[in-house]
Length: 238
Image (cartoon, rainbow, N blue to C red; front, side, top):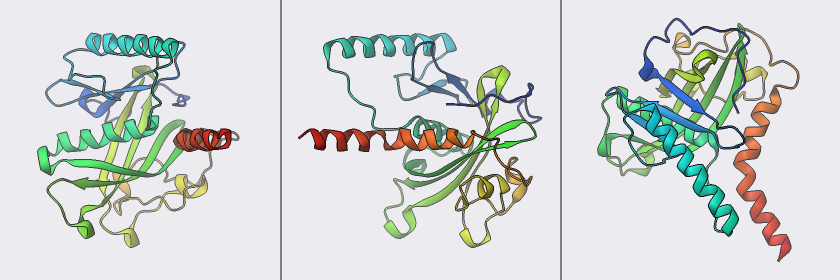
């Protein structure tokens, strides 16, 4: 779920299509799809629906085929539950964007290991989303050094129905992390930020989410717990 900004217009840095992650939520569907455009103009989809694709039209066809298959599986009782949340796929797209921008591929590319924290921030009438997550590299087999903590920030661009990747950085020192009122005031005081506070845009003003908007983050948490709740219900039935 993505809240709408109360103002239109891109951020000053939103000039590169490659730094945008497009959002697609078809009518009459709870599914949310993210589309990343790499530096070569190729389209990648999250969740993975095949590809890579050469145009937006191809991604739309892939989404329609996926939804048709879901409806067929629902009718036949063969539909499989999704093991990841919507935000997992978004963070995967952000991390792949980071790998692409830094020419990291193969064993050197960072892979998403765990999504730790997430928090909506509203500042100057614009929505931001902050994430902490851990990554690993196939080239690093040492468990003591393999897990890397990252911070990422995206902001919602209404007229493009897209998320601008403002920041994706490794956190090298938790003790020296930057301050963020947006996370601290709205229920995520443990969110780790880059020490360079100009690396991220939202969270510098001492404010709070409007009444009721904290439900946005709690609904994301409920999505993540969905599989566990279903397993508990199955156990009770037994």
